[in-house]
Length: 388
Image 1 (cartoon, one colour):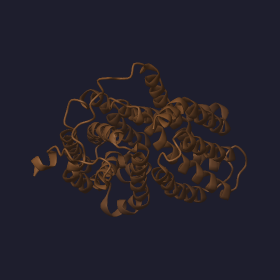
Image 2 (spheres, one colour):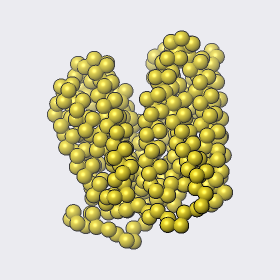
Image 3 (cartoon, one colour):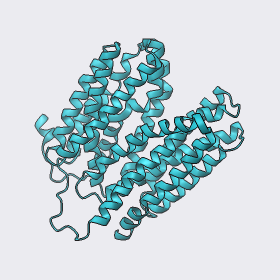
């Protein structure tokens, strides 16, 4: 059975429905826990008895593990069998998931989640490389993000009702059935990446610089957008909206956000990449400007839904811009570094700005960085569009 799973199938169609489905499930398993981080932090505080700081450290340890795993993956991604690499990572994820579920001590949970993050991050790097091989990375990234958002939305709504009955540790076992299923679906993934072309174009330096600008664009985009999203609850409170109203609005915005990524998957590169990016960022900026003045609960709901859906609409296109010119399978892995760094930098920058200059400046910086992200990726998006 194991030989069948790991065997090289020369006729594999990476664009087949089964291959795309496997890619989506792999993405869901790799970062499912991080999408329900707010619920997990609350459960660690209320059920386990951790402080807010300790709960945050547990989430950060997993994210740090995923980030650090990116760097050895850059070296090994062209040197190992992808199926064996993912299989090893999945087995480690099952083991560390069971360890996490069986302990509630802070030190043990911190270490087990960090080690889980290392395995998940390595698997994620290979997953991103595989997406870069598909003929339509815009569409694949759209489905990939959609799967993660669906998993996150379900977790945010369902998990709080299960903790009182099942306790905290069970949450780390929920993805194990999917992980086991993935082991039997590895045969639908390629075993190796593409060979680097021997006759490379003479002038590759401009393309490489544009790709680096694309990676920077992802970082800037995450920093600006996530900085505003992290404080959107407080922004609503600042004009007198009630917590119940804010919570309902953000819950609905999370669900509608699924439509953004799904829209990117359906639209794909039919109109190129630059136009969807520009339209998505423009609508996102319009939503943010609503937050600059006094607004009603209805306006907050509309703005939050537009903001979240456009964030998830634009992201697949930004990542696809990098994937489309990646001849080595390494640049696409670095999108994980760009996004993770942006996730960390956004709330930190927003916190620093808010303390001295208020929420309006946080929103203004979000607008400026959103515009900058488009400017950084223009050359890359136009280049690939004109080559197709």
